[in-house]
Length: 154
Image (tube, rainbow, N blue to C red; front, side):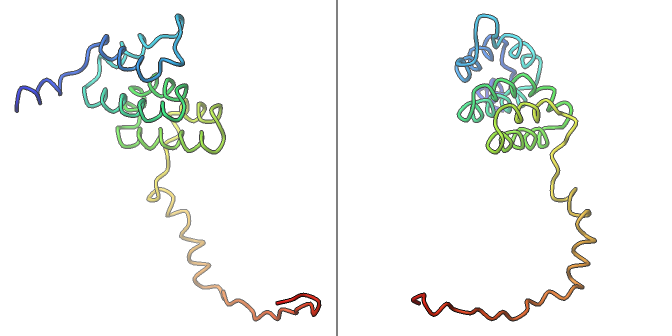
């Protein structure tokens, strides 16, 4: 492993994390609400988790800095609870909720770490009875006669 690759795999310090987070979501920070707590929490994690959190804070902050702040505050717990792939799905689900229903509902989605996002593999078995019924049903569309109003031009 090269020296640069080794240095890139070392976790970032709390001060380095705080500076990066402040650059990304400074608009929602204040003297009472800082990135210090988030940075301290992330400083004890692996570099992979730190990079994951910083990447998604950057992406989410372009949509809504407040949502990015809330994600940053929960990122380490989300990865610990859900694992990295499901934590990404959890955040994307919250971003979809934000697009449809706004910040309040998206915030509630983020706070609900127990509600894992469902993948098609989880949902698909629930649709098997409907699929079976539909495949056996007569789905022909009856012929329809459309009458034209003679007053209307074609």
